[in-house]
Length: 313
Image (cartoon, rainbow, N blue to C red; front, side, top):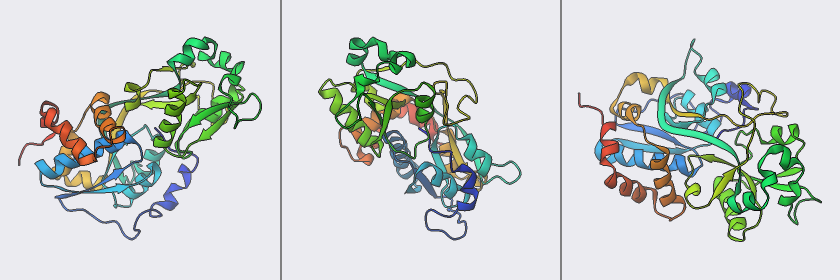
């Protein structure tokens, strides 16, 4: 789950372009300003951490809904204290975490493991095994053609066009006759995939973990060449698959340096993909209010979260 790196070089000039603007502000020791990025997993983490901060530690949480790159801008500007889910945005860390004058600092691992790739429903893999490699897919993109795609061009279902992806470069390199359908959001993409799944129609799409939908649908990943460092340096010509890596936290430097109770709690926080998926499913699929979903998880998992509470003093 990444956002476009194309404009990263210009972000220094835009550090206060999103949000309220003005000079950097410091939250007090009993307040934390938490970025909330627009996908269910992140929202699940934010819900649980907000619930615990407010109910166990008496900390006021201000949730700030932002896309990925504006999150970094606002942390650097002192408007946001924490990014809960960094998908290896080394490009943004170079800009805002420059060792010479860092505005943000690495907060360590979240316990979450990020993985992404191309998927089809299991019934597609069984009926059309030839599409399960990129070379085989190149000769059979018509399997995924729809009335909306021209000729034998296949439909490739994506989500937000701002999410950084290797998909256009992979399509170009392997000369795949695919048209990317940007649905606009994670929720819209899931709905498009679910619609095809319920009708047992072919569907090809980019997806990622952690992701609650894997518990709802039987999905199979397309085989791709193993990721090699820097193989995606040319975004228009990508010969490898996606990397997998541990997801990390990022803090505003002043927030971390103050070492308040909210920082110490967030610094200790780690949970698993399975934990996040359970809460995300309650919110995104079952329609629970985030606070109620968070409470349900907290009530059942004290053995997990009790270690996040920092010692007094």
